Image (tube, rainbow, N blue to C red; front, side, top):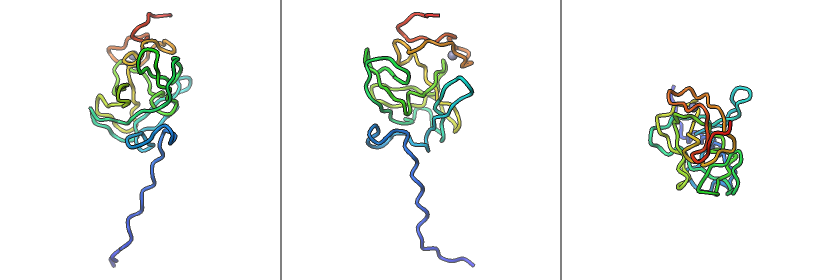
Length: 159
Ligand SMILES: [Zn+2]
C-alpha cells in the first residue's frame, strides 16, 4: 500500500570543506564531494584526485592559502617573489607534462583543461606557474611529450 509521505527528503550531509574556514570564505572552494587528497604508492607523496566529474573548461574550485615570499613545498607562484602556500588543496596537485588542470594564479582558480572522471588524478604542469621549483625531479608521467626532468620556467637543470 502506498502512503503519502509528507516528510521532507533527508537533508544531505554537508560535504566537508578541504580548507579551514579562515582560508575559504565564500562559495566555490573545494569540498570532499569535489576532490580528495590521497597518498599514492610508497615514496610518491600525496596527490589530489577528482571525486566527481568535471567538464573541460570548467572551474573546478577556487584556491586559497597564505602568502609566502619563499618557495617551499606546497607553494604556488603568484608573481615574482610572491607565492601562495596551500597545504590543504592546490599545494598537493601533482605534475604532468600533459596536464588535465591549470591554475589561474590571478583569479586563484583551478580549471579543467579536459573532461575529468571521478577517481582521476588532477595534474598540472609545474612549469606553467613556477619560475623555480622547490625541488627539480625526474618525471614519470608517461605522456608522449614528457620532458623527463622537471624544472621551473626560469631555471636550468641541476642534476
Ligand atoms: Zn612528464
